Amino acid sequence: MSAENYVPVCDLADLEEEGRTVVQYDGRAVALFFHEEEVHAVDNRCPHMGFPLVRGTVEEGVLTCHWHHARFELAEGDTFDPWADDVQTFPVEVGDGEVRIDPDPEPTVPPATRWRNRLADGMQEDITLVQAKAVIGVDEHGDGFRTPLETAANFGTKYRASGWGRGLTSLSYMAEIHRDVGGRDRRRAMFTGVREVSDNVAGEAPRFQQHAFENRDLSKERLKSWFRANCEVRDEDGAERTLLTAVETLPPADVVEILVAAATDHLYMNSSHTLDFVNSALTTLDHLGWEEHAAPVLASTVPQLTGATRSEELSSWRQPVDIAALCFDARERLDDLVAAGSGREWDEPDDFVETLLGEDPEAIVEALCDAIAAGATQRELTDAVARAATRRVAYFATNNEFNDWDTVHHTLVYANAAHELADRTDATELYRAAFDGAMSVYLDRFLNSPRAPVPTAEAGRDPQEIRSELLECFDEQGAVNRAARLVVEHFECDGDPADLKAVLGRGLLREDADFHTLQNVPAAFRRFDALDDEERRLALVAGARYLAAHTPTRREHEQTFSIATRLHRGERLHKAE
Image (cartoon, rainbow, N blue to C red; front, side, top):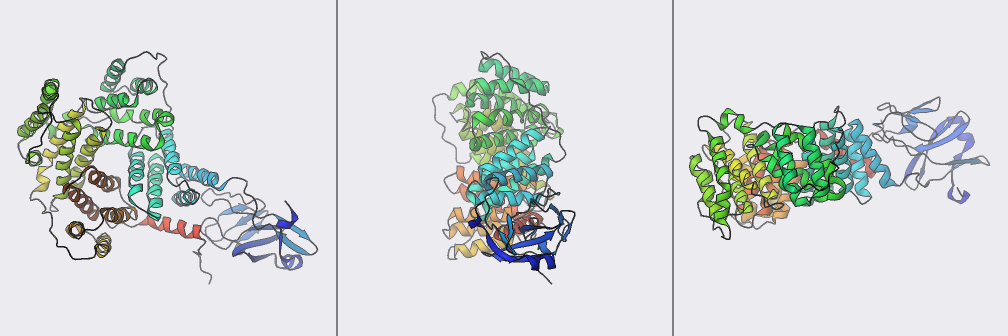
């Protein structure tokens, strides 16, 4: 290091007498210690939560912070405690009775790399403050989206033995909401996704991935048959090897077809989660890239297929009406229905969604069958079911048990997943998801008894004022109908829907939201984006009502994020007495 980089900061004699001191250079506080006949310089702010390290204790080369007892090797700043992070040290020169330091030393590791490594450390140790600091750090250095997403996806698929779960699904939903929010809320979104993966895999064993078959001449039809057969008998290893072979040999659309077929071989598997988790895994691959990540990501979805609950095994799908039999009968007719509709264009009847919301399951199934025979595509039919499922949430009667919010929520995310999968494959099996989703809409009918009315509102108010009031709704318990009214009023006042989504996103991301809430609001946004008429406002009404029903929470994680943000800005958290 050239001598010209060093600046004088204090007299050696004074430091020897006092043993420690703080010097300021270019607005930065540096703690100096005279210990064991040597001078050491460290950032005076404890990297954990900013306590002044000059007030700590030095013994046998170890600096201990007195606030949370983080310990640091004094010479190089390495911490003994992973939750604390290493402290910045500064090269020191002593000569002519003065102490000089290099206030801007070259980092041994590029900052972006350092923060990426710290993110992995934070997940490994399941330390949310470290995760928050790292997400903010990588964003500061220009990669605040892909690095957290890729790091968390790699970590979650490696260390969750039971496969793709709520943590990785939450990560996928947070990656999708990232584009709908701005500023620090984007950092909040990625912190939430990372945190949920870390929490979900904590204590889990690593997952050892199988290998693809050596035979590369297997057809799509053969691999599809093998995969479904292995899922049918719940053979996870056989299913995984088959799927990995498909990933290596087939185009992505064919792999999606295989997954959709297996995910719909049984009815409404895992109460919506199987289809939604598969769709979430594919959505994650949209951001990360197929070539490098498809194998570990899709292999991790296999347990959701082989271990799933099958709704035809549930009494609710068998009694008092055997709707499972109705679904299976309709499946038997699918090939003929699709053939009848070939070359035709479906004109959706005005009352079609109301039919799906009706109380006659046979009429619902027949309406779907008639639509297919009339040329309804998978995308059109799954969209209609998703619109009906959205209404179940928007019309949810608050005189029901609180947990019933999740019942209508599950139907919505299932129907939305089916609709989004229709953009990836035109597999005939996707029609089966429309039948299953419609039957789940039917089972939810009593949760709209009576229907909560969609509120009305008049124009004339400032949309920004409405958004501020909407955010305040989430500070109150049970402001469900008020939140819905404000969403409608925002539309009537010609407020920008992008601003409305951003406020709803802020309301979500500041909460200690549970898994279903983390799904619901982004799902409402995705339904909004899929529509192009008055239906759009209903999607955000549904999302606002669900969010208002589940807020406020303790906001513990928002406090952690706030601490990390303040530390990153250099603010003081500890106030000297």
